Length: 113
Length: 113
Image 1: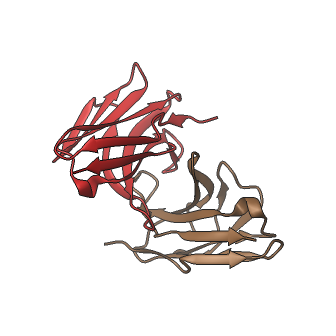
Image 2: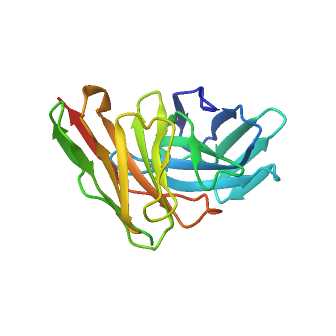
Image 3: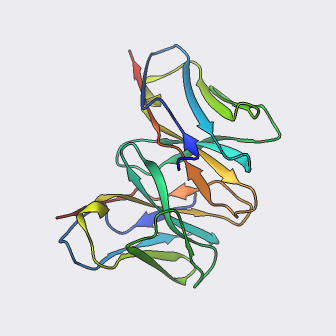
């Protein structure tokens, strides 16, 4: 049962344009959401997060939006750069379960010149 | 910066062998995790630990066990390796119960032949 879903396995965007990565979840007990970025042959690195009490969090070129009623979050990257090419995982924390995270299946972003 | 070190980058083992994957973190984190990453399935939690000698099953613990004799070290054990355990294994740590930001190791690519 995949509680965190990233329905787009891959996405290709031109340099300078906006990249929008989407994530849907089913568990209403999730209270905190994170995005991780993974390059080949490296472990994932934390990118940005958002609490369920907020609907937006911004950090430089990265913005995460949360729509609780739709159980949907998205990561916007503006402007996209070639170095953003990586696999992006969204992750969710279930309230009351310590710091265990449930990860999505990942979206591979390719930023082209 | 917290560092999470996985002892091997690549491993090739034979079916039926007992396999040990080692993970060490250097920043006194309480929580440690083992995930496996497979194409189309994302990161799936195998086992995690909140403290020395404590362990909890994740979503896919079958065929695995863990050991945490010291706070900084968390070992994943494949009791009798099988070909369906060929995967990328990722170790992670987090500071405490309420801290959801993981630091990941670089991963171990295990191939079972």
